[in-house]
Image 1: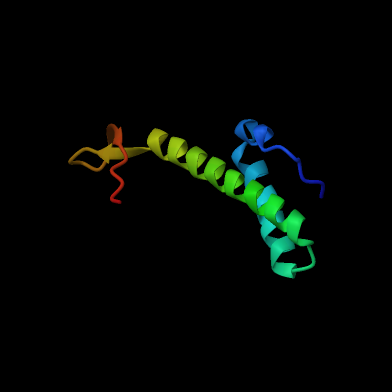
Image 2: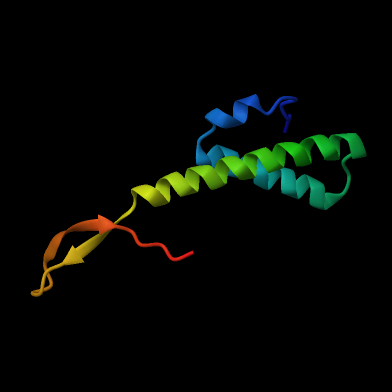
Length: 85
C-alpha cells in the first residue's frame, strides 16, 4: 500500500475508505517492520484518518432519527436520536 506524503486527500475520503486505510496503517505498525521515519509518517496519517472517521460518524449520528410509536403501537413520526454521552 502506498501512503500519500500529504494528508490533504483525507478530507475527501468516504468513511469506508478512511477506515480501510486506518486499519492498514495499524496492521503495518503492529508488525513492527516499518522504518522509524516511515512509522512516524504513517502514524501521523493514521491520526488524520481517525479524525476523519470520527467526524463522519458524528455527522451520521446527527442524521439518525428515532421512530416514535403511537399508543396503539403504530409509527407516529420521528424525533432526533437522543444520544447520552
